[in-house]
Amino acid sequence: MSDAGKQFLAADLWLVGCCAFYLLWWVLAFRPTSPITGFRSGWLLIPASVAGVVAVVLAIRAGAGVHVPASLIDSKLLVVLGVMAYVVLAAGTWLAFRRPVTTELILIVGWAVLALYEVDRLFGTQVLGRRGAIGFVVLVLVVLVICLVCYTVYYRLSALPGLIVGAVPLTLGAIVMAVLAVAIARSTAG
Image (cartoon, rainbow, N blue to C red; front, side):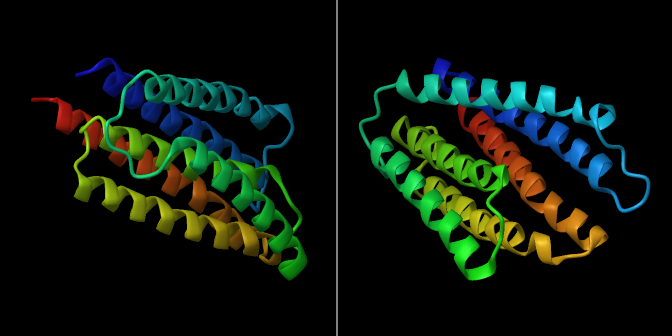
């Protein structure tokens, strides 16, 4: 397996860990009966944050360290589109739905940009073929839409539905990254 493949694989696993800690905190802190608040559950955000930062650093280093003869989208354009999407979504969800802008929106959009960046780099280094890369792009975009719906409706829900809907983006993000990790491992195993 190439160094980039190893780094992307490690980044994906770190991001799955990030989602797992964040999800555990979410369930404990926002469960409808006897929530565990404050530092008694909040400490879980420390390993979640560390794992998330490690994942981002590994993915960026992996992608920056390889020459990609083919690309689905320019990485600089992807970042610009991500920033634009965040601004439009923050304003749009506030203006249309009066949804307060929270950290989750930047995490959702940032996750999608990072996942698309990784898929593009894996395609460029031929770890993923064109069909596999396009399949992952579609998967990331579908999950992004689902996450944005969850983000938008969260404050309109009562405790239990809110707990469930709030867990969906973390769960789906972890699943996508786990599937991507498996795809990397399988394609570079031989």
